[in-house]
Every structure is written in structure tokens, then in C-alpha cells.
Length: 178
Image (cartoon, rainbow, N blue to C red; front, side):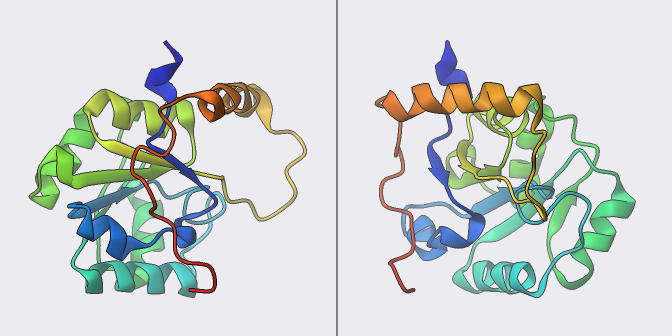
């Protein structure tokens, strides 16, 4: 039962992943959540995020932002990023995950989703049959009141840590010092 909430991988951040390895594994498109995955909630993109997208595109991977945010927020975020996006995505409903794959012009098994929330991002990707990577959520401050959902996520992650479903993708992390 808990398996539907388990990501294929759990990583520190989008910056800890070796995207060339993902490309070699056959992935051709990356779908990202924005808030708390790439930047703190409501913040604009950073030079580091802009460079990440450029690097990903240089490798040959396509990108798409899938977010429950409105278009005004997404346009502000993508000011320096050339990427497709779907706003008001109604995650975890699988409909827009599948639309994202279609827009990218790839198959589901060539797509991978990055998000920070188990009950929204990862559940939706899993229901869609798309590989998922959970990232530790990004915050601009030391979060004291993390809420019920984040506490439930901690419990699920304890079980995930004991499961055989961890590291389904293998070694996708950058080499130390890279």
C-alpha cells in the first residue's frame, strides 16, 4: 500500500543528480515541479537553476515544468529558461503528467519526474507510470512548522528506507567533487 508513495530515488537536490547518466539510461525528458523542488516557494529562478536547465538541454534532454501554480508565476520563473510548462496541473491527477509526456514528444518510459512532495508530485508520477525522483525540499529559511503532510512524509520515508524499492534507478548521483 505504501509503495504507491515511494519514489524511484530520493536525493538531496536537483543539483546532486548526474543528468548525463539519466540520458545514458534512456531518459529523454525531465518533468520538474517548481516550488520547493527548484527554488523556495514563490521565488524566481536563480542563476544556478538557469545554468542547470542549460546543461540539461546541452546533454540532449528536454524539459517541462508541471506545476499547480498559475501562468503568471511560471512566466516569471521561466524568464531566463527555455522550457515547456503546464500550469494549474491539478497534481496528483495523472492527466497532466501524461500530457507533459505528449508535449515532450517522448514515451512514458523516457520521462522522469522531479518533485518535493510525496502526496502530490510522487503519487501523481507513480499513478501515471512515470519514473519519479523525490528531492529534499528547498527552503529559504529554517522551517519550524512543517505541517501534518511533511510529518506523514517522514514516516513514509522511514518505510521507504527499509524497502527493496529504493534506488530503482541505480547510481544517478554526480561523482564527489564533480
